[in-house]
Amino acid sequence: MSLALILLAAGKGTRMESDLPKVLHRLAQAPLLWHALRAGQALEPARSVVVAGHGAAEVEASATDFAPEAQVVIQEEQLGTAHAVAQAKPALDGFEGDALVLYGDTPFITEATLEAMREARAKHDVVVLGFEAADPGRYGRLVTQGDALERIVEFKDASEAQRAITLCNSGVVAADAATLMALVDAVGNDNAAGEYYLTDIVEIARSRGLSAGVVRCDEAETLGINSRAELRAAEAAFQTRKRAELLDEGVLMTAPETVFFAWDTYIGRDAEIEPNVVFGPGVTVETGARIRAFSHLEGCHVSRGAIVGPYARLRPGAELAEEVHVGNFVEVKNAYLAEGVKANHLTYIGDADIGERTNIGAGTITCNYDGFFKHRTTIGKNAFIGSDTMLVAPVTVGDGAMTGSGSVVTEDVPAGALALGRTKQVTKPGFATRLRDMLKAKKAAQQTAKGE
Image 1 (cartoon, rainbow, N blue to C red):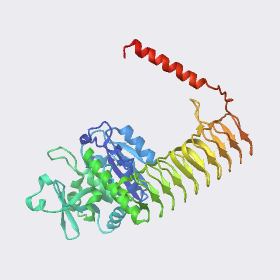
Image 2 (image 1 turned 45 degrees about the horizontal axis):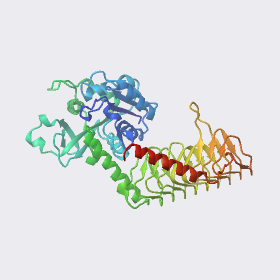
Image 3 (image 1 turned 60 degrees about the horizontal axis):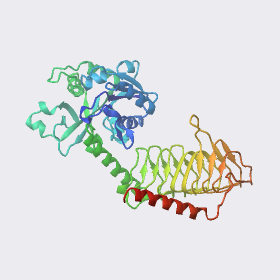
């Protein structure tokens, strides 16, 4: 059956104490919104609708950046969750299938849980996601009778017996799209807050002879983010789970508590990650690669047997083939390093293509930017770039060519050639001694004049 995703992302997030919309705060280096969208997108929805409100333009830009097919609708006034869902109705015009309601500030719900909700729809007209809370606190309670959900009771309206219930409401709901909208249309706002609560649809559904049921998940999946402290706790939870997952999958980490991953980091088995490594978004590290201590990687691909660091930085577009060595204080950006390339010290490689088994000497820089445009450097295979070479792009160094240390290369170097681009050295015997004596005398005179 076709599925429509409705993701509620209109809240301001007052407790975040931020001008940024709550759902755009970052967890594992991606907006909270993206985590929720990724969970829903795993079910391959036919339509995705994001309900924005506070900071709608920013939310829309972020949502469509991750899911270009998503439709963004605006909740002009935040009048409750049922009111938010109702804003999606025009976007679902003509749609036939189920609708699933998710929340942009709830990042940890898994694909398996959402699949279980989809399967439960075969038995119930309305399916609600619940969890057994260690401390139910002020969560809404799910009142059940056997397998059936009778109603959702808000804490403030619950009796003592109902407050003793530990099965709590996550807010996530699945139902036939037309049925969901009909139920939402029937929700009133006769409550202290004057808001339209999505939780009311269960009782309305029961009154219409429809069935409601519960799918249970682990409490950790339902963690919502409402404050900086909760965001910090969520980050810690994500990192702990990711480290454990990678260790279980055969990744070697000697100090995993010092390694930080992004939401989409992929590390192959038998890769080694040394202490104090940070992964930004978009990183793939293949089997058997080694990332040494204090390195930072983002938007890059590291192939089998490659070594990165220590103290290296791989920026977006860095592509390292097998057995490449990128050493200490080397930065690579938007560049392809072919098999066996070595750049072991103090080097910047940006906007470049480096051929197989080429050696890049210490202090080499590809001078790629003229103040207006980026230009590319191409170096062939088996070349040797001497230490402290400045390669002024656009420039090409051919296969097997060499550059002398300290050269500034501004013209193409043919295959097999040696390029020397430095001024002639001038040596003046004894001049350093005379200069030193002159400067010492000048300094002594200044000190005498000051009475030191």
